[in-house]
Image 1 (tube, rainbow, N blue to C red):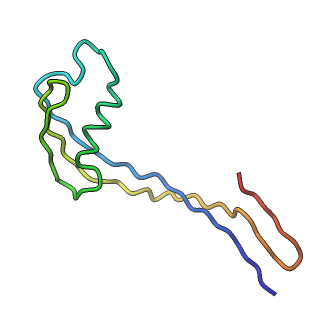
Image 2: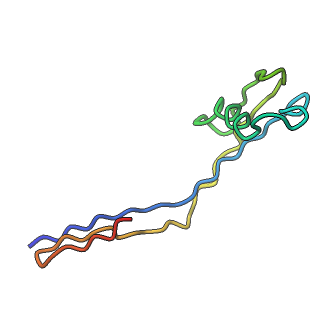
Length: 93
């Protein structure tokens, strides 16, 4: 007899960045600030802690630094399904 368990585990990781610039990222609050910040941070995403990149976007000179990641220690476990000789249970959402 065989029992098969399908398990999912998830946690939240928090990546931290610092952006320094010579003027507001979006003057007069026009445009998509979150989109611009995301695009700037992507310049150092996946690099090592302390990596910096300088650039210009929409006339704003910036320096972005990857400050590191706080890895989640609050993992949540979900038993999604169980297949056994006596039947199956499917809890997938």
